Length: 141
Image 1 (tube, rainbow, N blue to C red):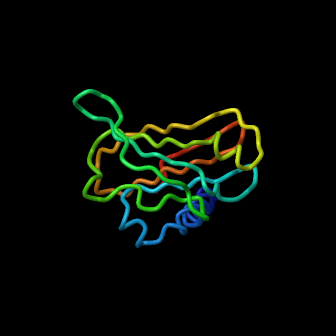
Image 2: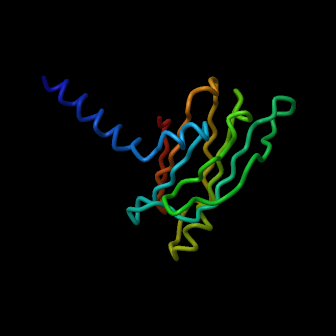
């Protein structure tokens, strides 16, 4: 019985975490990110984000897009579905610039999250939980 309650609790948590992703957002961009400032307890607004894809020919990362998080800490439309192919990708987050804008001294000048996409038909969500002296990420849904 306790295991069922725990599973139910986890499902409610998952629903709460993913409820912010609208069907349109998931359909329009096969890759999404969301940055939360854990220190301030709110979205990280105006954080510079860059998306790269590793080239198979030389192993170098090629810049695909750049922009900043919006008022909800998101960067919508990171990549078009037609450009999202099986490969290794990298999300770069300019945490130094973000913390400077908040008058906060941080330890990490940037965060890079490198991940592999094997099935581009599946939605990939790569969130970043951020504080001045730590960060965390996971494979979201």
